[in-house]
Every structure is written in structure tokens, then in C-alpha cells.
Image (tube, rainbow, N blue to C red; front, side):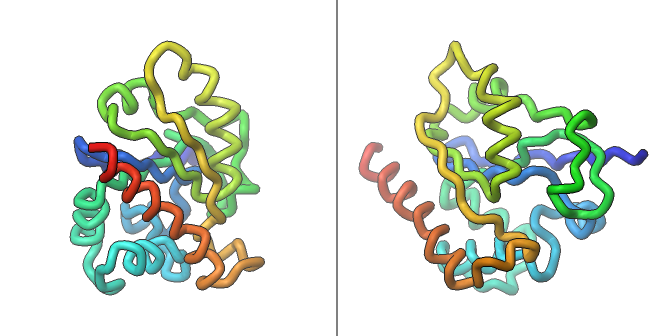
Length: 176
């Protein structure tokens, strides 16, 4: 049984919003990039929200996230999942990332957005119980998965819901 490993987080020191996925799929692992599957809507959505060209190379896309105070990480540090579907994750095999350390290092993060229900579920069950003695994020929001596996919503529907991230960034600007 081969265990998949998560990537290091994308996060600038002033990040105020954290987007959490579950764990990298096969295409992402092969390319060592977040959301690398060609039909995943994450980068097209981010390019529309943050006004950058969707064909920019990966390092430039990361730079745009950081400049806009958006962090990206996965809830799961490691686990076994044959293929890329979240439904195939073996729950007994997973380890979560160290969010106590992450939030300590990134104190401006006040909002966490979950890229799909699996990320939200693992975070609430396996991470939130440990977030008790420090000023952690105050708002948590489910967003529909950008994965092509979520076919119930088309791109425009997903984009409309994901636009809430822009409101979070605008709120942050008003508080500093």
C-alpha cells in the first residue's frame, strides 16, 4: 500500500484566508503541484477572482495567491488513496497536517475555506478538537469542490460560490 504525501503549504506571512483541500490526487502528485488535473477548476477560478491569465505558469500562479493573501494547503498530511477520488481515502491510514503550528506561524488567517466536503469533514473531526488554546481562525466555510468529480455544478456555478473569497479579502483590507 503506497501512502501519498501532501505538499508544503503555499502561504505568505500576511495570509488572511486559507483554502484547504483533502490531499493531492494522482495528477498533482505526478507534477508536484496543487490542483494539477487539467479539468480541475481551482486555477481557472483563482485566475478569474484574482484577475490573472489562466495560462500563467505554476510559480506565477502561486505568487498571485501569496500577493492576494491567500494560503493553500491540504488537511491530510498523508494517507492511502488508490486513484484520486476522495471517497477512496482509507480513513485509518490518514495523518493530518500540523495546524496548531501553521496557525501560530500565520496569525492573520481568520477564515478557512474548504475545497469540498471531504476536506471539511476531516478538518472538523481530526483538527478542530486540537484548536483550543490559541486564537485560531474564526470563520469556516464549505465551498464546492473544484474537482471534475463534482459534476453537479458547472464552472460558472462553482465560480459564483467561490467569489465569497473576494469578500473575505475585502473585509481584511478594511480591518488593517
